[in-house]
Amino acid sequence: MNKVYLKPGKTKALANQHPWVFSGAIQRVEGKPDNGEVVEICTEKGEFLAVGAYSPFSQIRLRVWSFKKEKINADFIRRRIQNAIQRRKTQYENSSDTAFRLVHGESDLLPGLIVDQYDTVLVVQFLSSGAVYFREAILTILKEETGIHNIYERSDVEVRSLEGLPKFSGVVSGDVPDEIIIREDRYQFIVEAAGGQKTGFYLDQRDNRKLIGDYCKEKSVLNFFSFTGGFSVYASGNGASKVTSVDSSQPAMDLAKRNYELNGYDVDRSEWVVGDAFQVLRNFREAGRTFDVVILDPPKFASTAAQVKRAARGYKDINLLGFKLLNPGGVLVTFSCSGGITDALFQKIVADAALDAGVQAVIERKLTQGRDHPVNLNFPEGSYLKGFVCRVI
Ligand code: SAH
Image (cartoon, rainbow, N blue to C red; front, side, top):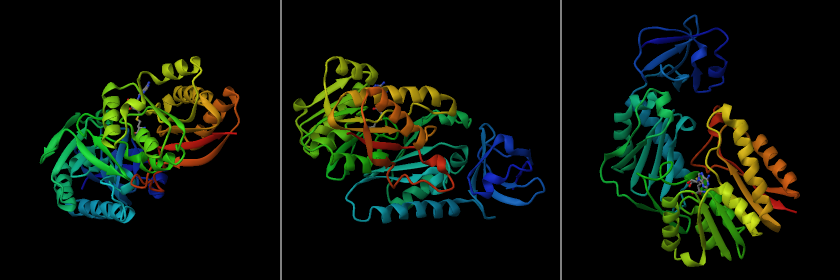
């Protein structure tokens, strides 16, 4: 096995079992490992630290497979996948849901691998060259361990280019229908594995959808960034008096309406607005409209640390307008899924927004990603979704 030697003083992250080694930490590379090949990671003196995948094009030059000296082969990957699936079985033992994230990358000790189950279809993303290196084995193992043979690959994401990998999206085995119907709680949703955003559905919001439903009884609810209507369906299911959904994507809005119908709600009794959230927020404000519950679940405003400042302004703007649209005693449910925006920073942004909106508010609940999107304690980067239920007092 080829060896990669780290510079002295650059081994601390690995000592803390963080799975990434950045290019600047590398002293020298023995041999010429291929993109994604397994290498031994050692100190400058050659002492063993870990085994990992080598990624020559990426700033994240190494991703650890194991901190033990062990063979990284199909059997190893199988054990890791089995464990990840078993954890979901334990988590959702008494659930009738039919969609889950089965593998959540680094946090499930499978760097760069995402696997979502939508009923009888698996949607897989290979985001690192190390995961791609074992692609064939992973696909076979997934079929054997889940019994599901319908697999769609959604490796059409930007991060692939950082790894020197081409984008790819398509059916890799079995039959994948254009639309899959999943069950979540007492609701059903249509998921488009091929065309949808992410892998088709925001599974990470499962617990929050359920929780926010409770705030909606007999309330007027404004759901910004509604995508395929997740929060809107839960709001109606919990007896909201009126639900307004806003999203910039017409296909997402069309699907939101169909999801609404699928669950037995009257599309015509709700309001559907296709438009830019910033503009619609302002229009509603100018029209003097107010709501009891405003939900803000925007896309990632910051993908890199450099974008954090701009992102913070974006979050501040929408939250400020969100607060202004609330009735007295109203509730703002606000999220950020930008990894670079910490919980503390997000709280500060929302606090500043409330100040500027001239309201006093309290956090009634802090929200995070669902338990099928776990955060490995050694990998805090895995914690990306944060949210607050803020009530105006
Ligand atoms: N809350 C959703 C997920 C939201 S994803 C759920 O639980 O399923 C973010 C959504 O924001 C996407 O549907 C995207 O189309 C939409 N979006 C992105 N930029 C936007 C903008 N400027 N204005 C309105 N919607 C936007």
